[in-house]
Each structure stands twice: as C-alpha cells, then as structure tokens.
Image (cartoon, rainbow, N blue to C red; front, top):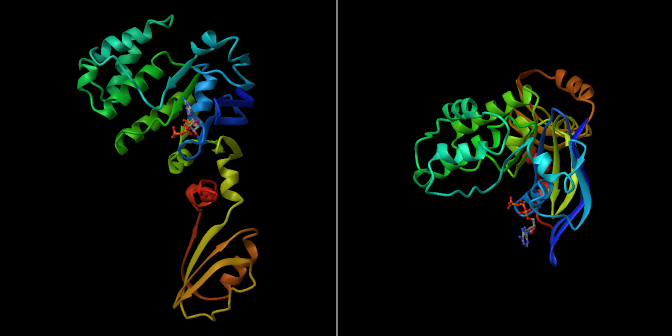
Length: 294
Ligand SMILES: Nc1ncnc2c1ncn2[C@@H]1O[C@H](COP(=O)(O)OP(=O)(O)OP(=O)(O)O)[C@@H](O)[C@H]1O
C-alpha cells in the first residue's frame, strides 16, 4: 500500500514558481529520501502535503485519504519536523511537550521521557536558554512523541552534531522497524544514501528522477584503481570500455560501467599487487542535477 501518493501537485506563489507537476509515491514501511538543492521545492511539497498551504492544482492522498478533505484527521497519525522550529521561548521544554501531547488521545509521558533521555535533552530548561541543536531536539521529540505511523522530516539534521545525528538516525531506523513510514528531505546526499531505500530528486520545482538507491548505484560507473607489479603499456586498457583512464607509474585508475567480467579478465592477465573497486557516492552520481543550468 502507498502511504503517500502525490499526483501532479503544483503550487505557485503568485507569479513565482513553487512546485510544478510533482508526482511520486511512498510505500508503507519505506524510508524515502527527498533531495534537491536549496529552493528546489522540498519544503513547499511537504507543507502542501500537510495542508499548511494549499495546492494551486493537482492532488495528494495520505493513508488513502485526500489531504485537503481529511487534513486534520490525517495529521493525527503524522509526526512532522519542520525545517525551522519556532517556539514560545518563555516556556519550559516539558510544558511545551505536554502541550503538544495534549492534541493526541494517548498518554505520551513515558515516551517523552524516553526520547529526552536518548537525545540528552534537559526537560526542565527554558526553551529560551537552549542552543540551536537542543531546540532541534525539542522538535524531534515533538514529532515523535505520539508514535506516528508516518514521520515527515524537513532537513532534520541541521544543527545536530555528528554524534547526535547518528543517535537520531538510529532512532529513525528503530521507528521504521516498528512500522513507521518515513519521508526525509535533505540537500545532503550522503545522509540520504545512508538511511533511505528510494529517493526522489527535485530540481527547479520539478521531479527529475525517482529511483531505488541500489539501482542508482548499480547503473553507475565504478571507480577501479589497480597497483601493478610492473609498469604496463599506456594503452593496455584502451578499447576496454574504460573512461578517465590514468596510468601513473604502477598506479592505474579508470571509471567503468557495464559487464565487469571482461575487464576483470583483462586485469587478471597482468600481475597486480592491489586493487580497489569503489562505488561512486551519491554526490558523484547526482552532481549534474545540482549544477545550475545557464
Ligand atoms: N512564501 C513564499 N512566497 C513566495 N515564494 C516562495 C515562498 N516559499 C517558497 N517560495 C519559493 O518557492 C521555491 C521553492 O522553495 P522551497 O522552500 O520549497 O524549497 P526547498 O527545496 O525547501 O529549499 P530549502 O532547502 O532552501 O528550504 C523557491 O523558489 C522559493 O523562493
């Protein structure tokens, strides 16, 4: 079943483009990445899904229900972390979280304590006295305290230090194993690569690709580097379907795409002392989507 289905969603802000004809779906149990450079339209898509703003055209459903018709009902089952969090600074963390919990029909006290302990968040402090990262943690607890079926995170890691990011990712993986579906927006490709099953890439308000992370990586170039025992002829690997061939003394490197067997045979015919075969990072795969067109 699809938890989120988006069909040609368009949102214009007056004359300026927000998003145009955005379509993709998120299946139950998926961790789905939504990536694109700043201003591409990630927040606009998410805010439309949560009916915080209304689409100019197109439609979307969450849990099979129309987002506009059933907005309030759907939101009871969603945990949302906005990209920027604003609070009543004068409140204590615990009071704000209790207030948030009061919207749901369950006792969230134990859960708030667990999450705060895990994220090392002091519940007794005033929001005003918290650092940016600690404010972000308040937002995370707020988003997860009612154990939602769908978790929507808009650039969730900004402000968290690397150790806390790891804890947060572990927490998300745990929630996912318990059954939560996750939509995760980010402009940092490496974190999407680490966590997500599939990704949608958005650029200039339009979806340019939706793909499994594994497929994206399989269909791409591999970086092969070998160290040979003796120097080889400069043209030994020419006409073998290699790209960006560099022969530097005993070090040979090139990019390769396609059936790996013939090239491995060719390598096995020389004596080598080491070999490295690397997957390109998502950054390398997607860089062309990020480059600005003139
Ligand atoms: N309230 C608004 N009024 C006018 N234009 C807006 C408004 N909000 C967003 N936009 C425009 O819509 C486009 C998409 O913005 P959006 O915030 O959705 O991008 P984003 O991918 O979330 O980027 P970022 O990572 O920088 O938040 C941008 O061109 C932005 O300038």
